[in-house]
Amino acid sequence: MGLIYSQTQDCDFTKFFSSGCAPGSELSSSFCSQCVGSRRAAGDESKCKASAEEQYYGYAGAFRCLVEDAGDVAFIKHTIVPENSNGKGPEWAKGLNANDYQLICPGQPAGVEISEYATCNLAAVPANAVVTRPETHDKVVKILHEQQAKFGSSGSDGPFRMFHSDLGNNLLFKDSTKCLQTIPKGTSYDTFLGEEYMTAIKVLRQCSESTPELEKSCTFHPCQQNI
Image 1 (cartoon, rainbow, N blue to C red):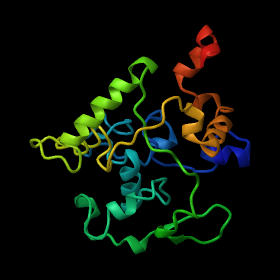
Image 2 (cartoon, rainbow, N blue to C red):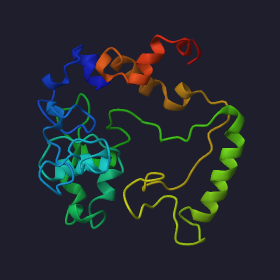
Image 3 (tube, rainbow, N blue to C red):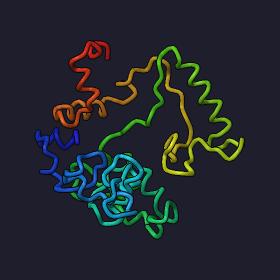
Image 4 (tube, rainbow, N blue to C red):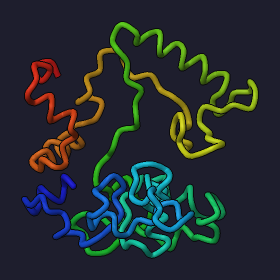
């Protein structure tokens, strides 16, 4: 959205995409029109909900929206197609061939193979992070490393797994997580997120409706001075 605004200078994104599925949008919005909810019953309250109850929620959900012809473009991570094709993934991904999908490169008229993600992408987005208070940083890091050793991908203690959700999707960490890495103590959030990512976010803040309510409230509060 930030990249679109930087080109159009228009906060009405329906002029760029006439419809779609962006879970969390207002239910009456055209960006909920392609969502399907849970498909369990008529009047499904989970339609366009920002949770796994909406089948098109998240990166895998966006790809599923594309696969099921509910959308023409999916905004996803570079790992999503390989994880949901060529015999891998849930039932809806059965029979999919990764080679049937291509990446769209900004400024180029044609797509490229999904393996070329390093040179064909919208941005290099940092991984999700566990955030702590400064005084508890060392303790949290120590505990997480201990638990990862027991219950991580190579752990052997019991049936519980930190990076696997038996009764849902991405419940504790993303199910695609391989391991946890320690970020150097004192790293600022803008350094961690990266200049390209921060620029896109700052551009998007020109559109007030895209700014979280918590951030808006801090604009009129002394806490704004301490961010």
